[in-house]
Image 1 (cartoon, rainbow, N blue to C red):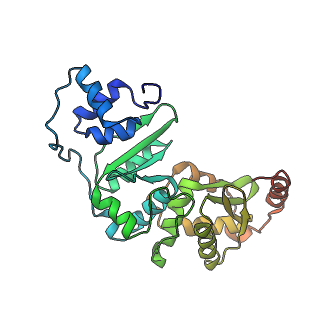
Image 2: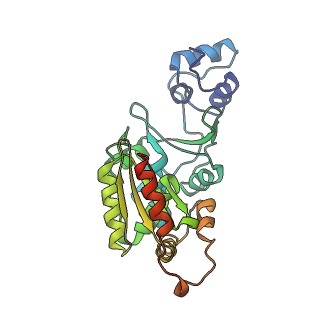
Length: 276
C-alpha cells in the first residue's frame, strides 16, 4: 500500500488538520479512506466525528453559471488540464506553473491551498463542490474521463477568444521563430470544432491526425501575429510564458508577410517520421 501512496504522512496529517475530509485525502493520496484513518490514528491525530466535515475554504460554487472573459478562459483551461472525479464531489486542475492556478483560484473566490505532487512536478488545485461539478457536467457537457470524447461546449461568440486562450495555455504551443501555433487534443470532435471556429475568425489552419491525438495549426508570421492579437484581445488570465513568446515579433503588422516555409518543411519532416 505504501508504495503507491502519493502523499507523505506529514502531508496527510496537514490536509486533515486543515479541514479536508478523509475521503478527499484518500483520493489525492491514491489510497482508501480507511487507510487514511489508520495513518491518522497511528500518529495520534485527534479525529473529527464522522459526517462533521464543513467547508473550511471559501469557494464561489456557482462560478460556472455566468459567462465572463475569465470564466470562459478557465473553462477552456479546465478542458485542457482539469479533471472531474467520477465518484467524489471534486474537480481539480493541474499545472507546472503555480501562479496561474493561484490566479484561477482567486478568480473562483477560493482560498484553497495548492498541493505539489513531487512525482509529477505539478501543482494541483482541488475544489470540493457538488454544485461546481454538476455545472461543469450539466451546463458545459464536461464528463469524467473526458480526454478522448469531450465535445466543444457552447461558448458565446464574444468569449471565444478567451476560451481558446484558456485551452491554448493548457494544451497549446507557439514557436515564434518557426511562425506557427499548435493545439493538441485527444478528442477528434473537439479538435475539429476548434479548427472550424478558428477558421471562422478568418485564420487558415492545418489539421493532423495521429494515433493518440490530433493537432490544429495556425501558421505564418503575419497570421500568428493577428491570431495572438485576437486571442489576447481581453487578456485577463493568461500564461505569461506563452504570451511572451508572441512578443518576440518586432515589426509592425503592416510590414509582415506570411512566410511559413520553415514551418512547412518542419511539418513535412515530422510527418515523414510518423509524428508531430
